[in-house]
Length: 143
Image (cartoon, rainbow, N blue to C red; front, top):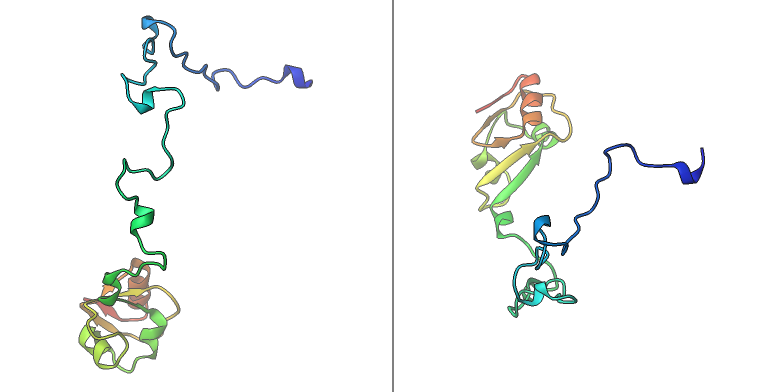
Protein backbone atom coordinates (compact mmCIF):
# COMPACT_ATOMS: atom_id res chain seq x y z
CA UNK A 1 0.00 0.00 0.00
CA UNK A 2 1.25 3.47 -0.88
CA UNK A 3 0.00 6.73 0.56
CA UNK A 4 -0.74 8.12 -2.89
CA UNK A 5 -3.09 5.23 -3.66
CA UNK A 6 -5.34 5.55 -0.58
CA UNK A 7 -8.87 6.69 -1.44
CA UNK A 8 -12.11 6.77 0.53
CA UNK A 9 -14.67 4.02 -0.09
CA UNK A 10 -16.94 4.39 -3.10
CA UNK A 11 -19.93 6.61 -2.26
CA UNK A 12 -18.66 7.63 1.19
CA UNK A 13 -17.73 11.18 0.16
CA UNK A 14 -19.86 13.68 -1.70
CA UNK A 15 -18.68 16.65 -3.70
CA UNK A 16 -19.43 19.98 -2.03
CA UNK A 17 -22.14 22.33 -3.34
CA UNK A 18 -20.77 24.67 -6.01
CA UNK A 19 -22.50 27.97 -5.28
CA UNK A 20 -22.69 30.84 -7.74
CA UNK A 21 -22.43 28.62 -10.85
CA UNK A 22 -25.60 29.62 -12.70
CA UNK A 23 -29.36 29.40 -12.15
CA UNK A 24 -29.49 25.73 -13.14
CA UNK A 25 -27.47 24.73 -10.08
CA UNK A 26 -30.13 25.94 -7.66
CA UNK A 27 -27.56 28.07 -5.85
CA UNK A 28 -26.77 30.71 -8.45
CA UNK A 29 -26.88 34.51 -8.19
CA UNK A 30 -27.28 35.06 -4.42
CA UNK A 31 -25.72 31.66 -3.58
CA UNK A 32 -28.35 30.75 -0.98
CA UNK A 33 -27.74 33.89 1.08
CA UNK A 34 -30.97 35.69 0.22
CA UNK A 35 -31.10 39.37 -0.75
CA UNK A 36 -29.26 42.19 1.02
CA UNK A 37 -28.46 42.49 4.71
CA UNK A 38 -25.40 41.89 6.85
CA UNK A 39 -25.44 38.11 6.48
CA UNK A 40 -25.50 38.29 2.69
CA UNK A 41 -22.23 40.26 2.49
CA UNK A 42 -18.78 38.76 2.48
CA UNK A 43 -17.19 39.38 5.86
CA UNK A 44 -20.59 40.22 7.36
CA UNK A 45 -20.87 38.69 10.81
CA UNK A 46 -21.56 39.66 14.39
CA UNK A 47 -19.94 38.42 17.55
CA UNK A 48 -21.09 35.36 19.44
CA UNK A 49 -23.93 36.18 21.84
CA UNK A 50 -25.02 39.31 19.94
CA UNK A 51 -28.79 39.75 20.25
CA UNK A 52 -29.44 42.62 17.85
CA UNK A 53 -28.61 45.37 20.34
CA UNK A 54 -30.67 43.89 23.17
CA UNK A 55 -28.63 43.38 26.34
CA UNK A 56 -27.23 39.84 25.92
CA UNK A 57 -28.16 37.08 28.33
CA UNK A 58 -24.59 36.72 29.61
CA UNK A 59 -24.78 40.32 30.82
CA UNK A 60 -28.34 40.04 32.18
CA UNK A 61 -27.63 37.08 34.45
CA UNK A 62 -25.78 37.58 37.75
CA UNK A 63 -22.11 36.64 37.97
CA UNK A 64 -22.35 34.74 41.23
CA UNK A 65 -24.56 31.88 40.05
CA UNK A 66 -28.17 30.90 40.05
CA UNK A 67 -30.41 28.95 42.42
CA UNK A 68 -33.77 27.71 41.21
CA UNK A 69 -36.72 28.72 43.37
CA UNK A 70 -38.18 25.27 42.71
CA UNK A 71 -35.46 23.83 44.95
CA UNK A 72 -37.31 25.23 47.99
CA UNK A 73 -40.35 23.05 47.27
CA UNK A 74 -38.60 19.89 46.05
CA UNK A 75 -36.58 17.25 47.91
CA UNK A 76 -34.90 13.90 47.26
CA UNK A 77 -34.67 10.85 49.48
CA UNK A 78 -32.41 7.84 49.00
CA UNK A 79 -33.30 4.25 49.78
CA UNK A 80 -30.82 4.17 52.67
CA UNK A 81 -32.67 7.15 54.21
CA UNK A 82 -35.86 5.08 54.21
CA UNK A 83 -33.95 2.19 55.76
CA UNK A 84 -32.90 4.37 58.70
CA UNK A 85 -36.45 5.58 59.48
CA UNK A 86 -38.47 4.04 62.32
CA UNK A 87 -41.88 4.08 60.60
CA UNK A 88 -43.14 1.65 58.01
CA UNK A 89 -45.85 3.98 56.62
CA UNK A 90 -44.12 7.03 55.19
CA UNK A 91 -45.77 10.08 53.65
CA UNK A 92 -44.95 13.76 53.20
CA UNK A 93 -46.41 14.81 56.56
CA UNK A 94 -44.25 12.23 58.39
CA UNK A 95 -41.10 13.37 56.59
CA UNK A 96 -41.72 17.02 57.48
CA UNK A 97 -42.67 16.17 61.07
CA UNK A 98 -39.46 14.17 61.64
CA UNK A 99 -37.28 16.82 59.87
CA UNK A 100 -36.21 14.53 57.05
CA UNK A 101 -37.22 17.29 54.60
CA UNK A 102 -37.66 21.05 55.08
CA UNK A 103 -40.97 22.70 55.77
CA UNK A 104 -42.54 24.04 52.58
CA UNK A 105 -41.54 21.01 50.54
CA UNK A 106 -44.45 19.88 48.36
CA UNK A 107 -42.82 17.14 46.27
CA UNK A 108 -40.45 14.40 47.45
CA UNK A 109 -38.84 11.91 45.09
CA UNK A 110 -37.28 8.64 46.26
CA UNK A 111 -34.23 7.67 44.21
CA UNK A 112 -32.44 4.35 43.87
CA UNK A 113 -29.30 4.99 45.92
CA UNK A 114 -28.20 2.53 48.57
CA UNK A 115 -30.01 -0.56 49.80
CA UNK A 116 -33.28 -1.15 51.59
CA UNK A 117 -33.84 -4.25 53.71
CA UNK A 118 -37.15 -3.51 55.43
CA UNK A 119 -40.67 -3.25 54.04
CA UNK A 120 -41.99 0.32 53.86
CA UNK A 121 -45.26 1.68 52.47
CA UNK A 122 -44.94 5.01 50.66
CA UNK A 123 -47.96 7.25 50.16
CA UNK A 124 -48.02 10.38 48.00
CA UNK A 125 -44.31 10.33 47.17
CA UNK A 126 -42.74 10.20 43.71
CA UNK A 127 -40.49 7.21 43.11
CA UNK A 128 -38.05 6.30 40.34
CA UNK A 129 -38.45 2.96 38.55
CA UNK A 130 -35.36 1.45 40.14
CA UNK A 131 -36.36 2.59 43.63
CA UNK A 132 -39.87 1.18 43.19
CA UNK A 133 -38.46 -2.21 42.17
CA UNK A 134 -36.13 -2.25 45.19
CA UNK A 135 -38.94 -1.29 47.60
CA UNK A 136 -41.29 -3.96 46.23
CA UNK A 137 -38.49 -6.53 46.31
CA UNK A 138 -38.02 -5.76 50.03
CA UNK A 139 -41.72 -6.39 50.63
CA UNK A 140 -42.98 -2.80 50.65
CA UNK A 141 -45.36 -1.02 48.32
CA UNK A 142 -45.79 2.37 46.66
CA UNK A 143 -49.17 4.11 46.50
